[in-house]
Length: 119
Image 1 (tube, one colour):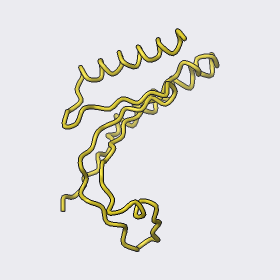
Image 2 (tube, helix red, strand yellow):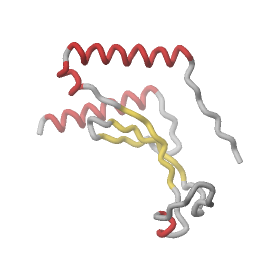
Image 3 (cartoon, one colour):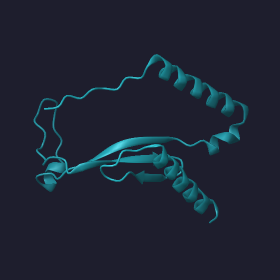
Image 4 (cartoon, one colour):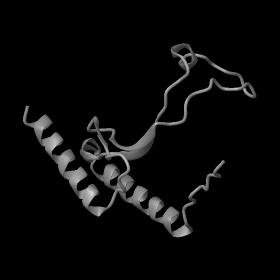
């Protein structure tokens, strides 16, 4: 069984997050209407699996009890979720995201936002 290694943020990365948050807070405090334009985004891995039965999907287990068995994951994809825009984008299977992918993602988001505002 492979062990998982948690990726911890460095002190500089933590400080950058604090600085960015303080800048956003100052902007919102100065002009409350900017809050409508602020967008949040996160990425999440979505794992595909096939349960042994439909019933096993709805079973709850107490701490320490064995979980319902499922077949090994059929794969996973990464989803970029833009909460305020109600936009989700999926990276192709077995593809590594890079700068060009992020640029293309932002262009798709821009097109989605343009489409929504023009209606």
